[in-house]
Amino acid sequence: MCLDLRKPVSVAVVLLVGLISFGCVTRSVQNNGPVETAEKRGYEDAGTGGDNYLSGVVVGEGVEPEREGRRSPLAAESKTLYTNQKFIESLYSNLNVNDVDAVFVYVFFSLPEQVYVYPTENYYYFSFYSTGRWFWGNIRLGVEERKSGALNFVYYEYIDDPKSPDESPTWHKEFGAVDGVALNELSALRYKATYRGKSVIFNLNDIGQDPPRLFKLRNDEELSAKTFDESGYRFFLIFDKKHSHFMWILNEEQGMPGVMKPLSGEIVYDALSGFAFYVNKKERRKILIGIWARNVRRNNYWDGPFDQLADNYVNAKLAEFIQRAYPYTRSRIDKYGKFIDEKGFRVAITPYYEYESLSDLLDLVEDCKKQPSDEFYPCITYDYKTSFGSR
Image 1 (cartoon, rainbow, N blue to C red):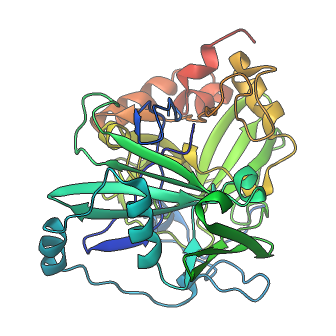
Image 2 (image 1 turned 180 degrees about the horizontal axis):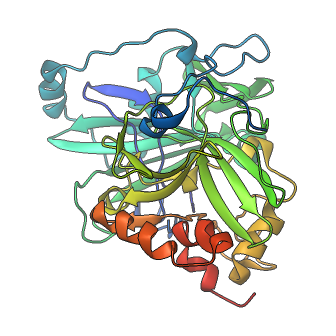
C-alpha cells in the first residue's frame, strides 16, 4: 500500500460501485502531478467434518453481527443483474477522464444515499467504461485522512495483462473543504460526505476483532487482525511467535463467497478467485498458500489479502510483529505498518506463493513435508521479504 492507488470494483453497467483494492505498484499520476506509490504489493464443532470440511462446505453463523443498529447489506439476500445492453451503452459514453474533478462529480453523483464499505482498509471501489476503455478506482476514507475531513480519490485505466505497472495512467486527488467536500463523522465508523448539495453516508465495516471460534490458536500463535478482503473473503491474520511468521487463515464463521474444489487430499482452491488453501482437518483451518500470479499482475480483487488490514482496529502489537517477521522494517514503520521514511508506502504482508500453475502448489507441499514438522507451516507460507535484513 502506498498512496492509496489501489484496485477496482467489478461491474458491467455504467457505474457499479462496491468493494476491492489496489496492490503494490508504481504509477504516474495525472493532473495532480506524478506520484510514486503503492505497495508491492478455540475449537468448536462447526457441524462439518471429514471430507465436507475439505471441500469447503461449512455451516456459517449468519452475517456479521449488527453493531450500533447498522446492518450490512449481506444481512439480506442480494441479486444483481449485469446486462450487455448497459455494457455497450457505457462504452460509447464520453467522460473526460483527464479531468479529475469531472470524474469525481460523475462517480459521487452516481452513488446511492448510503453505501457500505466492506474492505477493512476503508476503500470503496468502483469502475466505469468510457470511450471504449475500462477504468477502475476507489474512494478511500483512510483513518488519518478522514480525521482532516479528506477523501482520497483514485482511478486508472485497466489493462488485462500488463507487462509492467507503469502501463496504465493513473489519476489521483485528495478532496477536502477547499474543493467543496464536507466530511462529517456521524458515529463510530459512519461518515457523511457532502458535495454540491448531495450527501452520501459511508458505513465502514464494523467487523470487530474477536478471536477465531471455529479453530483454536496454538500456544505460540496470536491474532494480529481479523480482516475483510475486497474479494469478499474474510481472513484471520495470525502471527506465529515461535518462528516470527505470519499466516492468513480463512475465516469461515459467516460462510464464504467461493466454491472450493479439491486439488489434492490436502489442498483446495476457488476457481473464481484463484485462492488456494492447505487444509488441516485436525485443526480445522484452511491456510492460504497460493494466489494466481496473473491476478497480482492485474492488480484486481483477487491479488491477495495483503492490502486490507484492519486499520480501524489496529492491533497494538502489529508493528512489533511486522518488525519481527520482516527485519528490514525495524524502526521504519508506524503502528499501521506504514513506512515513516518512505511516505505513501506500506509493508505488504504476503506469506503465500504466487503460482502460475496449480501444480506448483502440489510440488510446494510435497517439498515442505521434507522439513521438520514444526517448520511445515512457515514453509508452505513462505514470504521472500522475510529474508531482507537480519534476524
